[in-house]
Image 1 (cartoon, chains in turn green, brown):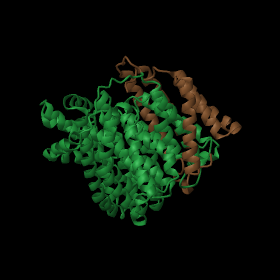
Image 2 (tube, chains in turn cyan, blue):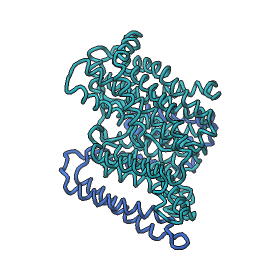
Image 3 (spheres, rainbow over the protein chains, first blue to last red):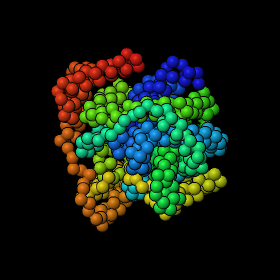
Image 4 (cartoon, chains in turn yellow, red):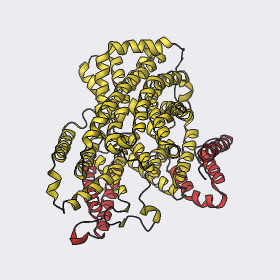
Length: 494
Length: 143
């Protein structure tokens, strides 16, 4: 905990927030890309500094995605896409400072509610998880994978294919039972498994460079005058939030629930919440209704950022792509998420909770105001220049992890694969989910099967295991019936 | 992302072929003592799953209403050129060292992205300087 109050800790939070604000505000650069490019630096930092920085980056980047919507009618991140039209209309009606203020304050309140629920529920889930054996962990992995199939919002068949690919990647290297090398193609490097972090840099960093080559060059029409008014940015939006407190609470809770689902994340949270709000409005249109949709989306996406950490910390299941990368950082540092983490590193857990609160109470409003003032410049950052720098950071990131130059080939290969998958409409978050849950699934299945001398009925004997199995069946049934109704998006790129 | 019918068919064939390949390879992995499934169990199921997904994707693709736009219309020459830089980088790195190699790679990528020559040079120098400062000097990563 003391690290967070050190000069390095405070600097990490401030710089992390600034970095997140810049990445979120530039259309096409996502929070996940920001985190993927930050991993090589995180790798060499103390986890007590690196992880809070990641929280600051993701919290601020998700809000900053609204800068593009406000200034140029271009959502900066997919999490902003659910309500960007309304936000743009509001900025034309009431001025950009007010619309960004509403977004920042809504994000901050949603983030605080998400963080409080994270603090409350993570320890409850951990005490529940203390009773887990390999049987329960096997079912948890199955439950996470099942939720992942329906969480993408696109084709369930393509999500399943992505998941299977991810689990397949996790089988590269020596197997957990006999130590037999699988799919290593004679490479000693691959015998140790596919380096997770190198793969992440390729999947979310390098693939973005390739993706942008296929997007038409856009020139943004910016009509923006940022009168520095504290009243319009802070007070007026806060007054509306107090007036609409039940809507704020409802939307934040929806964000928390969706963010908790493995593979869903902030953008799905925002789509589900705004869809529900539209249903509640019963087709009514007007300025007040628009404000409600914006509040609903902005509260829920930042609430989902925090709640995605609940399963990640307590069970080792990633709630979104950002927490999937965080789990990779845990693995690199030899930290096991779950009950052990809470027992062995209570200081780290306290630092993470504290950072969530700090990020939402101070960093988000501060960088929100700053990015509102800098919006005109941020939005016009030349994309070719950025892509050149991103490519360089992908190369150095892949190389620096192991000082192994051939990792650059693996990174580029994963980037190409991600690029092709995205072109084909296959979600990427599900590949990562498969890579994270694959080892948990296989290891716990093999341990349980060997322990029970291959009596497979023992997987249904224990009450908690049975409960998790029923939960899996419910998720599959609900996913098949309602999966696409509220998730009006085709990708899960946060 | 909207995908045209031909691309859907190509994807489904690739997934089917990959599934089949993984399934066949996994069958060759050893078993545990007493004939219990071992290292090949999960890969075989995964191969089977991919095979099934590939077939279902193919059926969907054949029933599919073709979209006008394809996800594959773009600057392929740039994609291939940037990948070529990645392939060559490790060899070039061994000849000239990391910093010269990365500076040169950034310059080439910048030019491919149609930056002006002077902008590409400046981007290369500033980014290489940033990498040197952050990774080499602050984080002490031996590059």
